[in-house]
Image 1 (cartoon, one colour):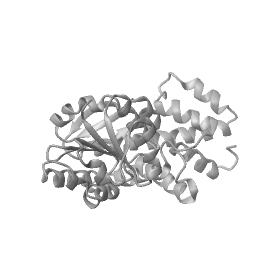
Image 2 (tube, rainbow, N blue to C red; image 1 turned 135 degrees about the vertical axis):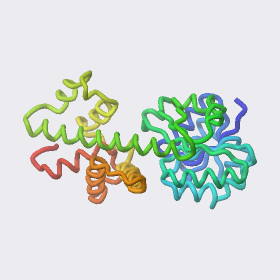
Image 3 (cartoon, rainbow, N blue to C red; image 1 turned 90 degrees about the vertical axis):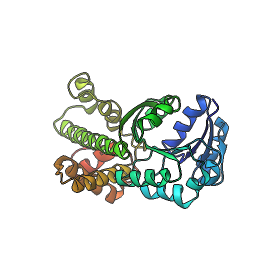
Image 4 (cartoon, rainbow, N blue to C red; image 1 turned 60 degrees about the horizontal axis):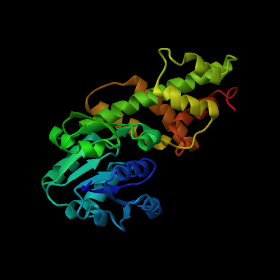
Length: 293
């Protein structure tokens, strides 16, 4: 592979995505605000840059996987990445940010002759490691097609519409994830209070209408009480806040989303920010003190 790729943001999701790209033969330069997280990828063959702008020098494609829209805007336009890129380069933002910010970034980059895709992902760290991410790409369909070989090691990419559409689809994905996690956590509380085994309950409903990726992965987390973050609860809350803000702009009422957002807000406020979003179970157990470990 001859394409030069820069990857900015090598945390829980970014690091395994970089390893997938390296494993496919791409040359990848990495940068992370916490330099130790980027340095850890040197052993896998990544070149480590001291600054985001240095990483972008000479890159044909720049991936960003950062915490929020403010961080993405700062890296692109405050830390010199946009200035370092040549016309014809492509920025692929795999972060989860507000759709209006994605559109604003696309417009500013287009003025420099740089293409932009908002391409958030779903599948968590497991999907990032396995190369099975669901990638929702907003922007020019021709650019998505042009980068098919780059997306291939990461997962399955779908062009979902114009700039900003990828972020809208990611917000909808996060609604489904959060509501399903909440429903599963409530079911686990009910099962235990009713005298059944949580593990046996999960096994019993496998293959039925309640089967899902969330029952598979997060159901196991809840049974085994393993809440190290694949997806921190603070980020789940951030996405729910953004989804409700977009809904308000569109004059929509989303009662299920509002309810689960309140539960995550309470959990984050009482110390659950860095725990996996499946740990919402702990919040419900605290409200029902006869259940839990």
